Length: 212
Image 1 (cartoon, rainbow, N blue to C red):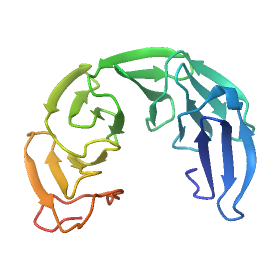
Image 2 (image 1 turned 90 degrees about the vertical axis):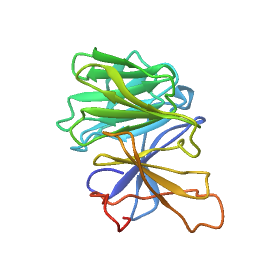
Image 3 (image 1 turned 135 degrees about the vertical axis):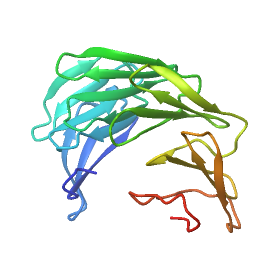
């Protein structure tokens, strides 16, 4: 979604990147070309730039006119902008790269064994990658993995990060809340009669007795 809530960007491997008017339900602009095979798209926090990730590179477009303004030489299987729109995290199969978008310079590389899904906290200091049976917590300042959770069910796709709590459980019969600082499981959220297919987390997620 665009930050103003009025338009949405969509990708498909056989389509160009499409901008839809959410109210009129129609395509208002296309960006890039079908051959680019975009896999992921993300608006910057101000809605001025649009990042599109492919299996080979990540392209940055002017959000208003659709002009290509920068190309980052890294795949973008998942993308996450920092506040201020100057930095972008791109996820590859072997980890995360954090870029200065203006200079197309990679500032930090974080290795990750389970880079199939990506979540980032609000201040861009903590990154989480996940796979089908594990997820890992990474620190941007040290570029190190600080904690790894293994032999789990329903960790990808995707991961949700609310404060210091991670929620996993897609494809499983129950959700699990984890404290990423301590590595402890906080609780199960049970009651589903079939595999869970989607989850939404409130901006402030509670670790107390009442699930959010």
